[in-house]
Length: 72
Ligand SMILES: [Zn+2]
Image (tube, rainbow, N blue to C red; front, side):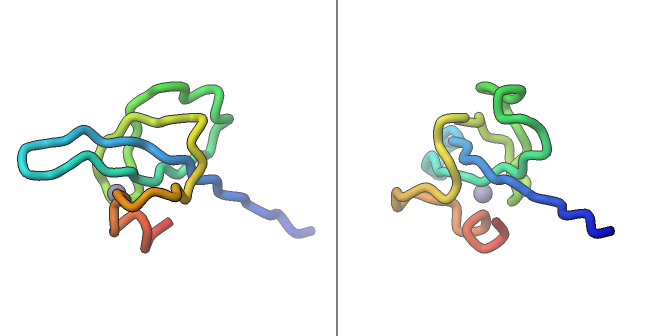
């Protein structure tokens, strides 16, 4: 019997912080997206960002976290 684990990523928006501009990050989701509506979650690159449930990952904009792009 084979168990398939599916990992879902959704996009999260970090805040501009000092010299760092706001970026899109990826958040690994093991729950239903409806349960994390608007919450701050730990992104795959280890920062905190506010989840945008309507925004799937990968995002099509250019202001995307390079670390999350590699990891997610
Ligand atoms: Zn990131």
